Length: 81
Image (cartoon, rainbow, N blue to C red):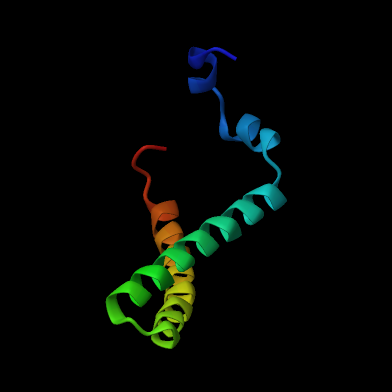
């Protein structure tokens, strides 16, 4: 596929190329990587593995909630559609 053809693709065409389950798995894998990164950084900063996992656990939940509301707000913005 040429670059110019890709730029002209619509959401419907793009969604045919990737199934929802794939998107879910990609989201979960990305969130896992992000949380492990937070745990590692927290462990380096605090020196306490238990505290690092506590921070990572909280971050896991808060980032998913924040992302949900971020997406909902962006869905209501007409700019760029």
